[in-house]
Length: 169
Ligand SMILES: [Zn+2]
Image (cartoon, rainbow, N blue to C red; front, top):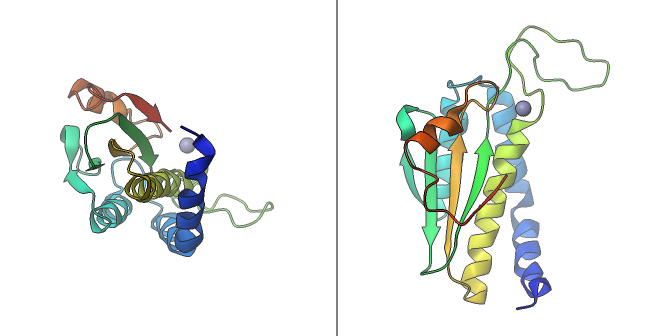
């Protein structure tokens, strides 16, 4: 198996979907929803994955804005990708280096990019697996409250990470 063989379909997917992913990231940036209140952000990501053929379980581990999206094309490793999308209170969205916090909610460390980046990885991997015939399962864990909410701990408690072979964040 030559890893570089799989670079082509992934790069092609990114060329074709770059603008769409950017738009989704910008919308999550504008939603700027803080921990456990990421209703619009999590829906946008879950809907996008669902439209792309993933089966989606919403509100997992007792958290309305947590979800699990999964796609499989047969027996093989289960690869998990983690995505976050919560903003921080009080920062506002900085648009220049001289920006001063404005007291609103905002994306301080770019969870709009983290959530969409992991989703883009999941979607491009799915297309690559279809095109190359590599089999396995891809999971995207929609993780709320990365900023001090410990959402992933509740997912672990409820057994959502029990059967996976690898996690990439
Ligand atoms: Zn952060």
